[in-house]
Amino acid sequence: MKYLLVGIGGALGSLCRWGISYLWTIQNGLPFATLTANLLGSFLLAYFYSRYSSKYEKSYLLIATGFLGSFTTFSTLSIELITFILQKQWGMFFVYMTITSFGGVLLSWLGFVSGRKGKVISHGR
Image (cartoon, rainbow, N blue to C red; front, side, top):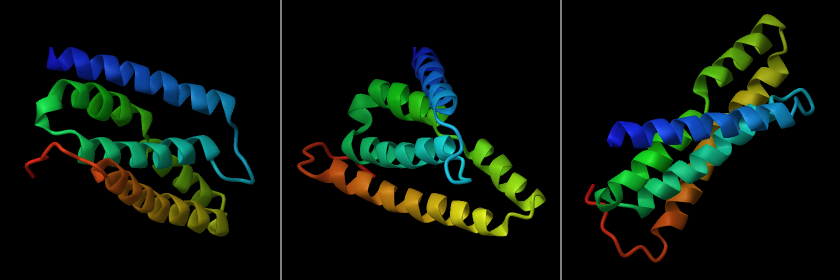
């Protein structure tokens, strides 16, 4: 059952990720689709991590592990950064890396804090 939940979540997450890439193109030189998926995914994963305990393991496997695991995309980020290097677009490389890194950590923190607000369930970690 756990494998099925992760698989279903993964299929849905990858379809949503593809949909973002299909609808949004590069904006001002930045790969906006990947940036959006990774920043939104950072917030949502931290929110679910801080909000739900192992009592909700099935929901966590479906949403956090499956859906958000396939929705966010470190491998695409890496290729896009390498492309900036190969094209000697150093400014874009550093802007993209900075927004992704600091933005991801900031949004993870905000997601974690948002998930903890009014939390009744102990995470046990």
